[in-house]
Length: 358
Image (cartoon, rainbow, N blue to C red; front, side, top):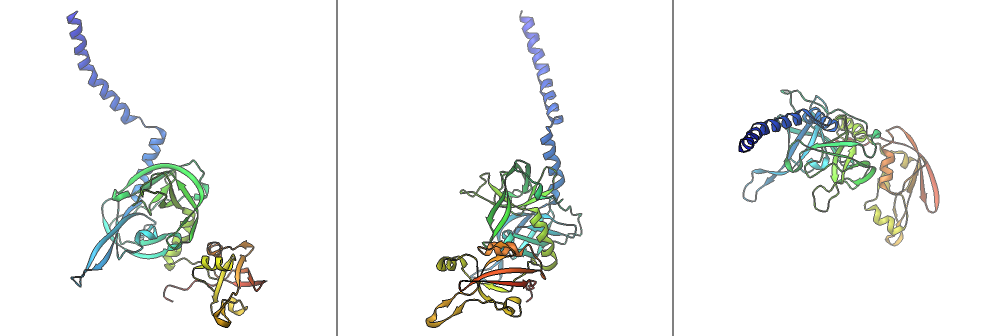
């Protein structure tokens, strides 16, 4: 009996490690379809993701020499082989010095090319002729559905090239940009997004860019499963304009809007865009559109208030901006306003925006 027990113990010692090795081998060879997809996406897309650090030059009280003070970190991605990098505007908003680090560890000084604060997007450029850049592959955000898998790659808390997986939680959300304008048609996801992920790509299950991770809803400041991304179809429209002109080419109507519009709308109990003044040599001036006027005893007389453009309601500046984005310079739009209890109608030719040098 003792001989049999010793034999069993010996067999256990001999075969147990072999069984463990067999299990290890099985794990290395076995991947679920979803795991294989995640791995392939990371291998394909991660070389397109960059780490962005920014600094400000601050003069010390005791020295006239400016000191470089780190401001924070964020994420971006390679737009094309010419070295253009896309990120969020708020990532570089107050930076004097911006550094872009590629996945291979190479770092380059970045030059700001253009920005659109209303959509929280910015374009940088690096001179990286010594390496082969891997541009991101673009997808189509209009094809997204709630429940589809999405993947975020970024640098949360400075931990570079971190991947998280989730789903599209909702579509058509609105969030405030740094300029207080609404960003519409935003993608909501439960893929973990934290500080440092801003400006990074949100990818579909083909590894294609479908959004730019921009904001989170979090009372604690960390991921709470509610993140937001600007849809790639918006990005694809804006980025080429930023590269070419340094700013978006949304046309202008030729009016000057009133500051603090919400206050005055409440004061006068009205809806629409209040015209403060008209721009010289534009159709609003030519056709007699009128801004605010000061009358007797310092009272303010309300002029035109825009409530409709091309049949679309205009209740505030966000509605107005959204309609302008649908047009280009040279388009003629039908504008309806209220003035002195009358409805005024104008056919206005839209003008190009002033250039940055103007």
